[in-house]
Image (cartoon, rainbow, N blue to C red):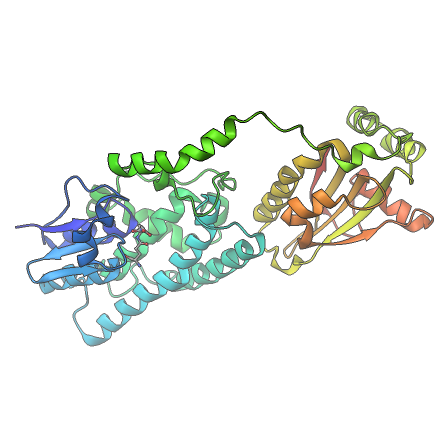
Length: 416
Ligand SMILES: N[C@@H](CCC(=O)N[C@@H](CS)C(=O)NCC(=O)O)C(=O)O
């Protein structure tokens, strides 16, 4: 009789399903399992007190934690040696299981979940996760430079668990330009996922083409939350929602004016400057930059340099560019009152991120400081326009002058 695995067909369940393909121990996914429903029932909580999947039901009792389940099933047919044929082999298999779980899976998750709205997205935390992941993959790559498999000369449980972890990353976030830094890992991965016992469970794998943008879902609102709920629960929730819905039907309150709209009129019209910037295709210095300084009104506007505080974490070019792109998206709330240039500087990591911002008013608007969390990731310095060197730096930042402060530009982004 087959052992029953209570789970959806996910990364963690796949570990055991692939073991089963290799060693012939029959395992099947529980029929009618519904994520967010079945795993909340008292029967399930009895099997796993934390209510997470997968759980394996065995004649002798349940087992939770996917690596423990996979080990258990691997041991059920010792002849296949998935768990090694000597103490040292078993020790090394355990070693790679722990390595892949702690040095790879944990960092992929720390990069991937915030982008899917499952955890808070914090750029410095993302940088740290990517740096740690690269360290893990470098170590794996150097081992695989002279080894076909992680332990011995055939597939073991260490390979099965490592491949399942990599599959999730490669499908979701580890794009080709990232994985190509680890060619032995790539060779290992694509060879194994195309072996029949892997392919039967994993199907065809398509590598992510781009790093997913940060989700608009709020963290703490996992995708499962959107799935249908049992009727009773849905009814209860509808009740809870009622007072709010009634409140929302009240007449809309007049929108408070932005304090920047109450400032004395300025001779500088921001839209005129943005148009001049966008329409100047040649002689940028003579036309756009000169036009800027002719228009600039230091009483109605202020200029600010910003300097990213954590440049030493900018180790991956496209992540740094995405981070700056995210900042500009979040500045959307200030479009009527601001213009900005952000430069990503340097020929190699760590990249420096520096910017120039023009804000309505003589200070950085309070609502921008309060509502755009990226602002505190930068050091802000007001430009002193009586200082010719600072004025020249402003001009250079507006025109993407290269080299900038002696270094090439990796990218320049404009907020207008
Ligand atoms: N360390 C656990 C992780 C299990 C886990 O995080 N399961 C997720 C799905 S992949 C889950 O059940 N989440 C539901 C929840 O957090 O309530 C394992 O390897 O089995």
